[in-house]
Image: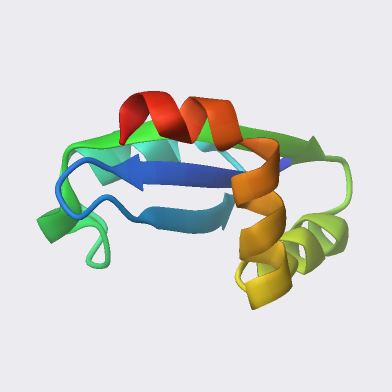
Length: 86
């Protein structure tokens, strides 16, 4: 399986969108400060993920989430959850 995931940074109150083939290991790396782009933004919470059987479907979804329309979709899908954690 291939995963698209969204992390919430409690430090800067922003989202991080990523892709991985192993979600557990990738989250451990984010939390451990091993990922350059999120190291200074910790602590992080996993707030959403999707599983895809096809790598290219997952990559396409990640790319979409990083667009303005995709971010709007994220905020619509996760409206209540984001209200609670912000």
